[in-house]
Image (cartoon, rainbow, N blue to C red):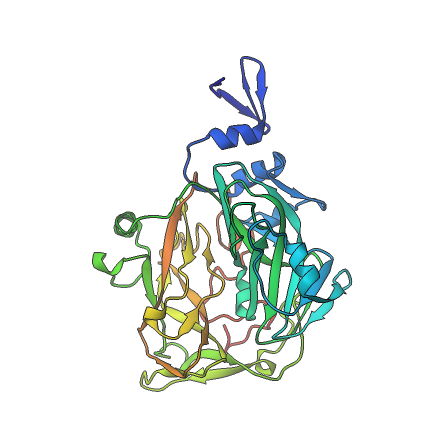
Length: 401
């Protein structure tokens, strides 16, 4: 029997005094796009997103939901993905080494792999999927974090992707790469976006969007936008006395993620300088913080994600934390965009990158509607005015601002 939905009130739809289940209504909709903040609130109210501990309002970002670590972590021998019909907990039992209590805080050692059940669980409608990324500070600390779900009866799970209609728990795989870190239950290392259908913009749509609003302040031609909007690395040092980035030191103390503006960056980072745009040689295995040459803008009705590592641009990976929220780089005072901070790691061989070299692409997706909150200083966004900026755990200074 078909019902025409004519009213939506408090998460329940009514037609001729017949109440429809909210998830049934969500499954019947034909809208395409990423869910904004107000719709994420509705998903929580309707039980699509569930949690044993109440989800707080500040977990809800303009186009994503911050996910919280539970009270237990499991040290495992290796990273894994559950196969067809397999649960994450089954793999933990077979690969687990020991269990760690996070309720009072615990240190996760660098280069080790941990699995942490998250506070949130999902009951997605059949038209909705999810995709995750590390939060900005997580990436800038080189904490390799991926979302894992249980496998289905007909297919295995994928990292950072939640299949359509998924019902079940969520887990974070955590592997600190540069620094050992202290983490407490409730910490937020990754975030989840919700998507109806396939909302990724075509090359033509992104070209039209760039023509309309200007997605970067660079001189970009239509044929440059292929598989996303390109951005390049700034190694000129023109505006910072030659400073172009930072390289993580190999032997440092522990970083407590709960301590904001606490650590002296010089204890953990080596500043990098170049002269006459001579380029920078990336050492295999080292971790770098650099900045884009272009200032990036995300209009209010779109969200963006850094495209995955592409071997065509070189043997290195750029930007582990890839979400850009609606309103990023949008200002009322005439400024055009905000530079993106790049988290870079080279693989296998030393690799020379040079000023202006394209190192990645931004893929834009439209939202189902404009969010009721946007990225920026008004909502306390940590990196709204960033240039070459380290994670929020470090004190700011003239040389790291």
